[in-house]
Image (cartoon, rainbow, N blue to C red):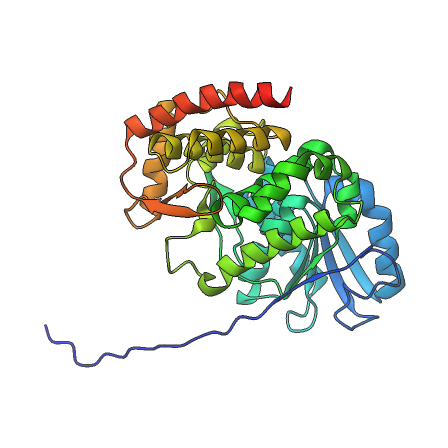
Length: 379
């Protein structure tokens, strides 16, 4: 059979979004959420935990600055990150009769909430603008600076989603004052990820001051706190900017995210996302030690810093068979190659494609030894 006619269409879609900082974003006089439109209509979506702490302030802000609004409250937590939550947002958008050209949705919450709202925004009439206001440290330094959205599907972490940029991400560290220490640690894991694979200065800051930052929740306004956040956010954006759609699959920001999706989903709801990432970093540091990419001294420093940040380095969910399957699953999603980032010393990384079951077993062995040493060093 002969093809009579064929056409090839090629197009480019420019993407531009802002990541900006503010202080006390819910103060009625702060215009950061308004896009210059005091008196507009807005649908505000938040989660039950944020609503319990900040719900009165959110509604007071809306009454003062908006002529019409609705507040939708979704259940909190990773277990709620399902397609049903996306449907709930879509139903609210439709019922509010939102004008997708002029009325961005405002998402105020952690990374789970902003991922859900971002996904719903990307598919409602094929694109509806939204503004992200992260209320957790992991949201500020990771979930709200990129363009990925998604929810879990069956046992798969973020298996369905889109690449869709928020029109703006508004970062306000005053939200962190109400976080418990564990959720601050959760965000510090993503900061440590950037440090280990590209920023030795950031690692030095976390090694020396991490426990102080953990206690202060970034509320002291010290130069160290500012530098840690600026390096973490700037480092993440530097890596994401040239590769927003992940056409290049060797991504150093995938460090900590090879084994962690399986660990996290198997331990759900026991482990937070950053804790699973910390376990992945511990394992890959062990593998790197086995391969002589890091020295014993450097590995000790990594584990001592992980422990000092309140993060786990070992967990019963780190079973050899499951970890081997996790690597196989990740390989399928990286076009048939492992493309596994491993640390090279502190502050650099390399990609490998030949990690074996024996390497993972050796990494687990190293984790057992290094975890004990790390606990002793911080005792």
